[in-house]
Amino acid sequence: MVEHASIAANMHPSDGNVRPIGTVISFASTPDVYTFHFVISSSVETSKQAKVGMYVCTGEDGGFVIGQVVNLIKINEYFLNASTFKESRPQVSFSSIFPTDQWEYVLAEVKVMGYYPALDGKQGFGGTVEKSITPVSPGSSVQAMGHSMLEKFLGFNPVSGLHLGTMEVDGLPVKVDLAKLFQKHLAVLAMSGAGKSYLVSVLLEELIKARGPMPPVVIVDTHGEYTAMFNASGVKKRFPGARVEVVGGSFIQVGTPFLSGGSFFNYMPNMSPVQGRDLMRVFNELRQARKKFDLHDLVSALQADDKLGKKTKDALEGWLYQLEQYGMFSTTEHPRVDEIMKPGTIVVLDLSGLTSSKQKQIIVDYFASRAFYLRKSRSIPPFVLVIEEAHQFVPQAAAELAVARHTIETIAREGRKFFASLCLISQRPVNLNTTVLSQCNTQIILRVSNPYDLDHIRSSSEKITSEALKMISSLPVGSALIVGSAVNTPAFFKVRPREFLVDGKEGGLMEEIAAFSPPK
Image (cartoon, rainbow, N blue to C red; front, side, top):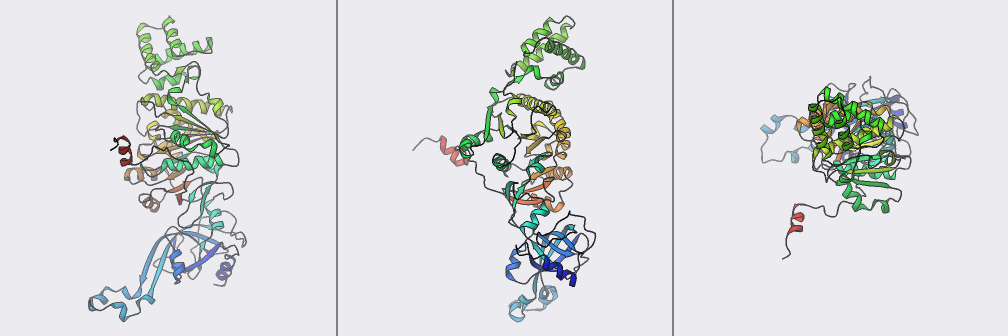
């Protein structure tokens, strides 16, 4: 106990890094290396501070055992025996006879998160977290972790991190390191209306305001949400250094010379291997002969080729004419991928005005493959590709219209080697490709209640516990869990208010009806 007292003294530096909150006790089969219980101090003030989700620590073997409160149990010795009430008269108040309030206390259950072997009294602690292999000692003082200690434990960057929100229980600003967040891939998952796009807009604000170099960001906007937000916000006035470009779907042009023979296999899935081989030969010959050409030129080259049979020509021409009807295959691309992918630039591909799902798929496939090709050749800087409704573009089940699936899967598997990052946003995780989702090393999950979605999320991330899944299903709108490479351990937080404005036309059902109602 002398050692514990000494450690507790060092754990109480002048900056208020930690505060005493209770004492470890022997309860049932604990303490063990996974769980311990402690009785919360009888003071009313500290009892109010003890909440589920709070991080606590206690001194052990010269370091700290770190844990999180997962349950609170209120116990009263007077009310442990049911037979006591059976024999008492109902009309008599039990508390008027016995001082029951003096025997009531709160027991906290703590899940052990890890052990820090090193201790620095002024800075909180140092070293790296290890697996706890020794149970804490009954009688040890339990401390509520302060902000500076908790920042180190969770792996936040308080100086230059992206400020996404605040931990509701501990009140700690959630500032995630940009490099950790986008070193690999990110998934934002939630049911409809839980705040996915709101969270992403906060993330975009932080990227715009970032002090250091910011990667270019391309947003696949399927519903026009980000276009409306940027237009309503006057981003360039509010953030003078912001470089935001919105490109409407009808203005997007696919550069035919930049396509590969494999692209046509995706765009025309009914093509046989023999037809595909013939098309690739004609395509490659045309590209060697001319630097600029479009689908019409490719059709003309097919018609003039003497090596092709009539049936093959007719089939290939028919499929190419179908693609040509979209009116987006040109001799050059717009926007130029190598020009828009500049540090600090946000490009919104607004696909909300397009009605063809296949056209949207082709655009996403083209921009993803072009950006990845340019990144591998170091022609553009590391980038982030944000895809709304990702389950439509990378579905779990094979789908004929999922043209972009192969390209996105390739980036998911290989992109981190070249710092090409994906940010996948989905309201139906169960429909999102498991392989791609498992490659998203960081996940930010808002409320998800569908049990199939929850099972899919858990199978894609080994760091999500059953306790976390229970909390995810009941999260209020605007609250989220971040888990994975960007943080050392999962953390729940409330998304901060965004500075961006929303479209002025946005409103509820009755407001929308009133907008169409004639004046009285």
